[in-house]
Image (cartoon, rainbow, N blue to C red; front, side):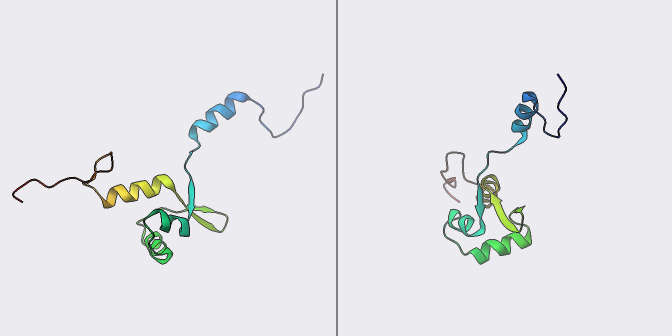
Amino acid sequence: MTQRHCNVNTDFYYYRTREAYMSEDRLYSVKDAAAFLGGISAYTVNAWLSKGRLRRTKIGNRTMIRESDLQVFIDRCNPQATNDGAAGVPAKGR
């Protein structure tokens, strides 16, 4: 039996390890990211992308934003929020 010569790697281990590096993040368009961030304007999201406040992921000519990047942005904007989503309560007397 002759061995097939092709560029496709049929090794199952290769695909298992490759999946470990691939993200399961959902990708949002600029318009969808604006809705995710509370219904702000898509122009505001584009401004934040150009200023570097949000990270973009380019797919062809489309600008997409990962859900994890949106969560990081929200966490940076709300440093007092806890993991369960409740805002930190300031101490009395302040």
